[in-house]
Length: 603
Image 1 (cartoon, rainbow, N blue to C red):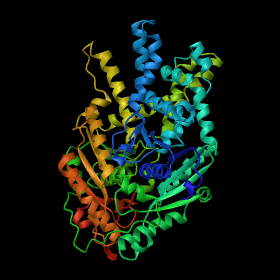
Image 2: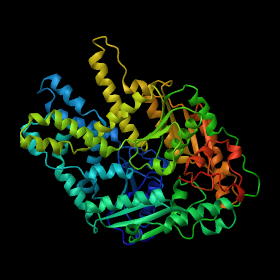
Image 3: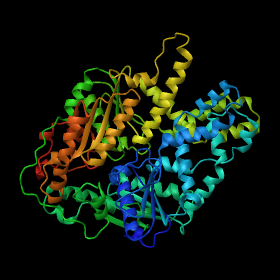
Image 4: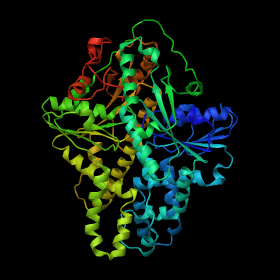
């Protein structure tokens, strides 16, 4: 592997959700530890699954991996980091300032912005605090999906005068005060990331147009802040020999090769590795050790016995959704499981039935317009654009509060409004508007990957608590966005997953998080099922057999109701193909050439 030749001390894996960053980071850590290096593997993803990959509990402390000498791991827990961060900010003033003032500071530090900043604070400490990492030859970072990481690397700088003079009634003064104390550490962290002698950035992608576009965007954004020493890994490529044995496998390989041929020029210039699709799930040390070896392991043909999967179709779920006549339908899950495609499929099926539908997204990396590739009656499309919503909010604040400031105060308020906290507030306001709209029509929402969605729900919960604190004492009637989300007649949360061990575990963890917030998921959708597609390729058949136990776990242990959507030959782009996704599983795919028009995908 090119990215493992003469590796520097810090290896930084990033990329779109669902491309295999964690598996490759874990396999890299094992390989370096097996070679005699002392290695620390760190996850900065709010939806981390490093512990699941190794089959051990890790959490927010450095933990030895018993079966791999010299390998240690750490999962930065955003909630624990946020609490430690709050204690550090509030502790010195507790007992000094009036209790009401202290409570106000704590409320400022209760939102999702503080959670993100606190996790980033721990991440940067590992890059620059030699006392924490002196014992390790390599520190490997498995990062959150790209937008989260990049936004925090771009934190603005000149807050000291603004904070010292107390001007402007800042939108999130508490978090900014903490940031100011850490500004030198953040500068040093970016410098470490930009130093090719110390750090190697590895962009992980799949051979899909959307994944490669996202990698290209990430490459440009990281280069713009000085992080130019980058490598590219294309993960999960179907081996050529499988394509000759199966129409489905051949169609998948043709799509992959077409995507690789259209690789953006900037990515073509990067050192690049290709990792083949494995016949097994990448969970456990044996599987992870085999990921980076060449040639890859061969699939077990397993005979020609049929692989049967009898499961409800997406259409059956839509029957239940349509019965209420309106409401919010939120598709949630880890990045890379196909939420955008399934949100579009649910929306077009509802619209086909004559129901008014708005299809929208809170995911900055979503491509709803490209997925629809057309229009239809009863369906409108929009998105929560973080940049547009943030600019709208900035202008509102500048008009209301900036008018009272002098030129210097207004300039510093503008600087404050460029913080990540501003985006959090703006996106939450847009989310609240969408929830209100769902009182009259169907709103189908494609959410950002799990960690980001939970941060948005955190902001929603903080707003609910503040409203309740102010109005409960007055006996006033009120309805908050969180109360809408907790009402299954108004909101139906659909958890999207793949029929693989780690995605199902992550979906179960998401369900537990939602339940703690008082939100009961309405249904699960198992997307891109190979078993439902009845493949003939030995590799795909082995993966299909692996799926059966996971689908059984969803249907018997996790979900009140569920549906399975098969992996089909062509990309599910366009209204007609999206409508086909809602068909019954047993009718959706026949592995023959005449079925090639009936199409979803590997998204």
